[in-house]
Structures are given as structure tokens and as C-alpha cells.
Length: 297
Image (cartoon, rainbow, N blue to C red; front, side, top):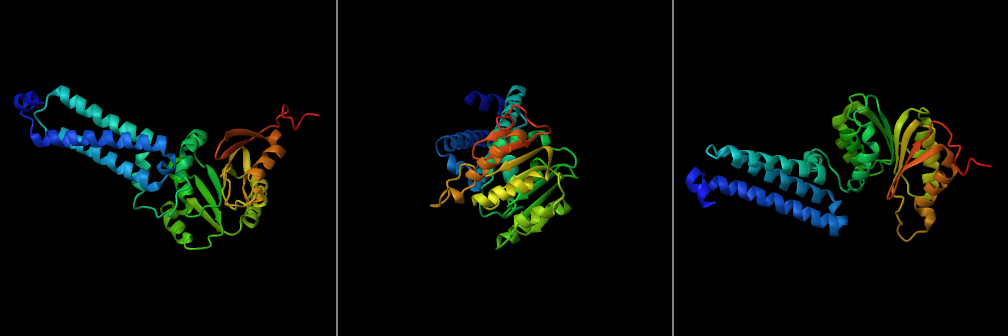
């Protein structure tokens, strides 16, 4: 360090800025890793991810500032600084998803976060649909629009892609929904009605993707599933939320799981299960699966 200061006359302020930025980045990534590993529940919170995002942005900014302010640093050190800044950006973008989360601060109003925990699986399952022209999505139970906004920003990115959001919008959360989806204009169709009424009025086989996250009462989930089935194109995807949700003191009749299992049992010859975990994702087959146990004599 002393040799660097006196031979190249690097300003102490520049060294401090770069060193502080590097240290902050390392501390941020290490803390985020520890929380995601040992306390995953907290890593799903919106505030946690925003904090991580802001800290990483600050670290990258400090490292970049140190690089730009120091005109006397050697080419080797400039290259090392540049690689450090790029490495931090890559780590943040791919591991901590800080880009979309920090950009969303101030643009949207949310009171809960039931979406972040699903993003990793969505990226894998829905990735092939990202950016495709004219993709249409259907969401049953949209609340404040957090998942709809994520889909619009990450999957339904083509200017002709759209989403239909069905909800009873009974409460103050409707104000948040309207504000959150306003930037997307006509690409969001809002239907204020009970799903079992609204779904019957939609055009069959007109959606590439459906997300069922409305009532969690088993009978309602099953009805939503069967009504949604006819609305999805062959080859389209249906996502069921909260498959492993245990409810709050109620019996199985008040949780989605037995309804989803019933749907999968009856529709086995007609679907391929793409993902099963906290959520279940199925693909509507183009042709009957003759090897299905339900299709055999």
C-alpha cells in the first residue's frame, strides 16, 4: 500500500473510496448469503432485498468513483478495478436480483411480498416465454399486482404482451393495484368480479399462461382450475400457488392442496407436471398421454 501511495502518488481519498466500496460489497454479499442460507424466511422479504440492492449499488458506485478519480493509477490497477466493478455487478444481478428490486423502489406500492420466494422457479419455468410477441397471461387473484408487475417486467416484455387480472378488489389494496399497473396501460386488463363468474366470460384457448392464486378454499381452487383449463391454449402453462400451504387451524377443505391433487389426478392424461414444490406448474398437453395410468384399461 505504501509503495502504491508514494511511487504512483495515488490520493488517499481515492484509496479510501475504493477500499470502502470493496469492503461494503464483500460484507453485503456475505450477509445476504448467510441470511439466505440460515434464515431463508427473511430473505424473501421485500425490504431485505431492497437493502441488499442499495448496498451493492453503493459499493459499485464507490469502486467506480475510485477508478474514475484516480488518473495516475497504473493500467494493471485500472484493469483490476474494472474487473472488480463488473464482478460485483454480475454477483448482484444473478445472485441477489438487486436490479429489478432497486428499480422498483418508489415506483410501486406494496404491503406484502408473496412473490419473491417464487422468482427462481419462475425464471426457469417461464424463461422460454420471455419477450415472445403477443403472449397473454391470466391471473386469478392479483391483490396489489406484485406478481403481475413482475411478469410484465420480466416475461411479458413484448409491447403486445398482456395480462388479465381477476380479483374482487374488496378493500384499499385496489388503490395500490391501480397505481402499480398504471405504467403498463392497456397491457393490463382488470376484471373486478368473483373468479367463478369472470372466468366463464373469457374466450376459450386464448391464454398462454394462467396463474391461480385466488381463494384458497379447496372447492374454489378446483372450480378455478377447471374453468381456467379451457381458457389456456394447448402447450400453455398453469401455475397453482400455495400447494404446500397448511392453512390457519382449518382442515384440508380450506387449503389448495387437495384441490390441486384432485385436478392432477383427473387431468393426468392431459398435463405434464413441469414443477412441484411450494407451487405446482403444469403444461397443457397438445395430445393425450397414452402412457398415463388414467388412460390405460
